[in-house]
Image 1 (cartoon, rainbow, N blue to C red):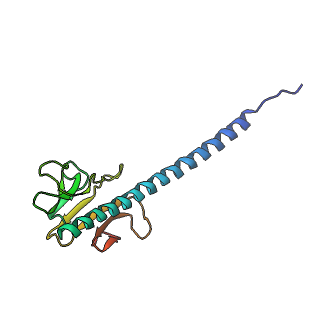
Image 2 (tube, rainbow, N blue to C red):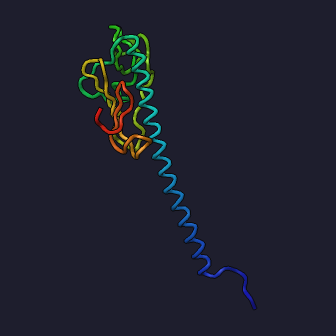
Image 3 (cartoon, helix red, strand yellow):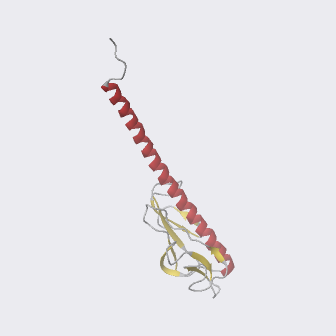
Length: 159
């Protein structure tokens, strides 16, 4: 008399195959998430550069910040022309000084889980440096620290 069903070995083989396939799917998904975060970082930096250039064309200078400013934090959420006619990072469009022209209404912050924030420095207002960190190599950009200035986005941290 024949019994219908699966043997224990057949079931274990099927479970092992399903486990292997699900592991490969999770690894591929994590890689796609990392590339997505890096693409957002590069797009954010390009948007910030565009806003800075809009401000420069109207005020003939970039916001002057001798020490690095963390972008997208509580102290730099808006890029606008302040009451003095100079482009500046503000906490909002109304305080601490009233904004005239708003160049970027919401300055983006670095997507998590990478903890390195976007930073901005400009000693004299005639040039600037934006720094950001990538989780993996993206196009011509390197994994780790990269920077941007008026000449474009540069690979590595030497702007």
